[in-house]
Length: 107
Image (tube, rainbow, N blue to C red; front, side):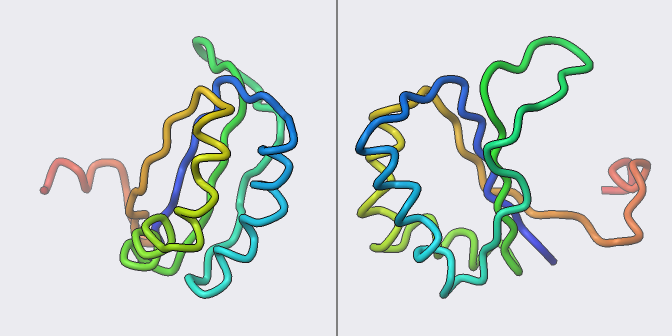
C-alpha cells in the first residue's frame, strides 16, 4: 500500500540553503521510489486557513517512506529546510483503492 510524506510549509525563506535543498532532494528519493505528487503549488483554501504550501511525496510503502526520511542522503540536507522554514512533516500510510470512509468504524 502506498505511503506518503506530507509537509506543511507555513513559512519558507528562499535563500541559498533552500536552493541547495531543492537541487539535492530529488536524488534522495530515487532509491526509495519516491515521487512528488504535490510541490510548490498554491492551495485553494475552501475552509479555514492554510498558510503556505503543501508537499506530498508518494512511496510504495511506509518502510520506503521511513527509509527515505532517515537515510543519510536526506538527513544530510534536511537541516537546510528546517532552519529556513516553519514546517511540519508526517509520514502516513495510504488506504486501499476500495476504501470507504465508513471502513474506519470497523477498525
